[in-house]
Image (cartoon, rainbow, N blue to C red; front, top):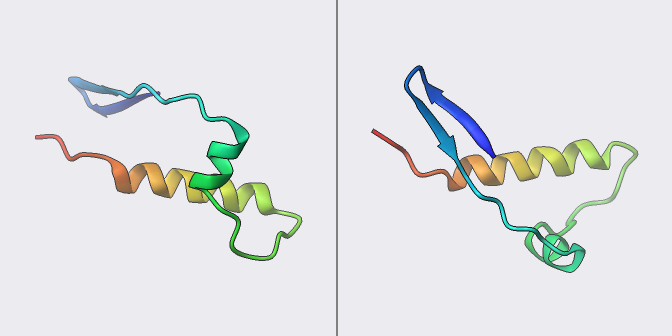
Length: 57
């Protein structure tokens, strides 16, 4: 995953390949599944990765 940090820096992060079992273990479904479950799951994953970022000077 490549992310632009600012005009002079890119953040390059190598994301591991997760099996379905690993994925469900890391991101368990804890609420009732609705028709828009994929949007909620995507938001949860994005939030998780944003929270895990290390700040850079």
